[in-house]
Image (cartoon, rainbow, N blue to C red; front, side):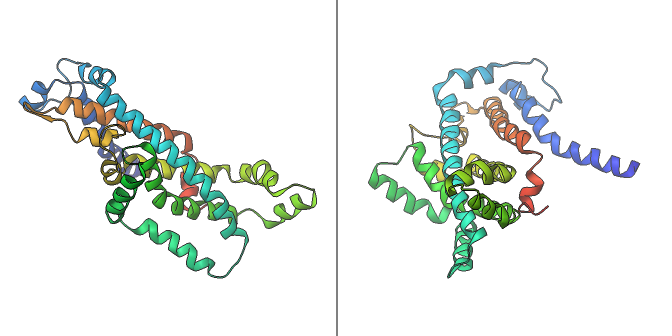
Length: 265
């Protein structure tokens, strides 16, 4: 038992060291960061955070990122719900091939689609808007959400659908008032994975934006100035970038295991 506890403590320490070091650097000046190794700030400063919250190019990046991530999550889950229900409840010609084709889109690297999306969105006027990134991420998140939700829906007995139909429920009313509450944990897990992919994805987000919709990830790659790298500011931005993901994980922490098992646990 003591051996297991020791291993767990060492593992958690190993995981927390990079986060601690990021917070540590965010509270230092660049001079202290570059002059030597210190385990904690000798003189704590919040100037790096003040810069982020007062500079439009920084806090605007967070707003842009949250905007297209929210749009993408809503669209992806909204499209995946009826698609997953169809795969779960019906058998039709080519259903397995179609399901595999959806997953094959998720397997492709984003770099494959960067140029086609850039050309298409430039032509239709969507370039440099949150919608451009949100719709591009749907190509990867919709298949993932369908995959997760289909597993949760398959765990719900078909008799519930039949009983609701006998009781006079229309399909939309049954789906919203009865079926969706039964798979609420699956919807939360699917939304979590869609959020995380869209939040951390950089290539498409940077390729499809330039100024007005530039995400925080792209802003963080441009912290080099004539005086060198602004390490403290970059660390503070990194700390604030972790916060949304940590909050989402906190709210769905009880359902993540089910998500990895596709709802069959």
